[in-house]
Amino acid sequence: MCLYELELIMRKNGLSLKDYPPMPLPSSDMLLQLRNRLITEQLDYDISTKAENVQMMLPSLNSNQMDIFRIVVNADDSNHGGCFFVYGSGGTGKTYL
Image (cartoon, rainbow, N blue to C red; front, side, top):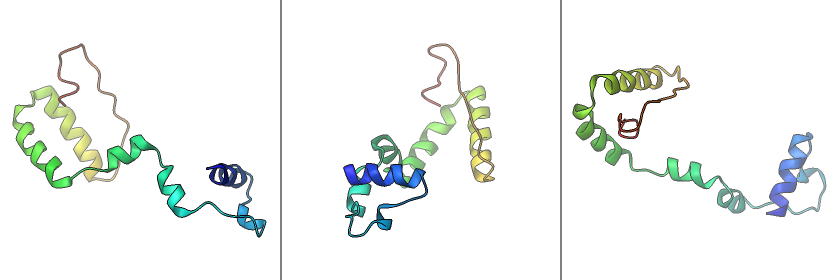
């Protein structure tokens, strides 16, 4: 992990451990293990299960939730992306959305 941290610091300064042979380099396996756990969890999902969930839950969205859903999906489908902040009082369906 120390080699990984050193490599990160050096890259910020335009250098690398590769510039100082025979300095050992962090292994690619180590880099995979050190990935952000939360990002890894979010990326580790079954697409077909998620698609089934959408088809099952979509009809139960209220009109406001459906509007937001369409805006987000359209932004993704068109590759425009966006930053979305969903807010509301407790019990208004933010988590469900």
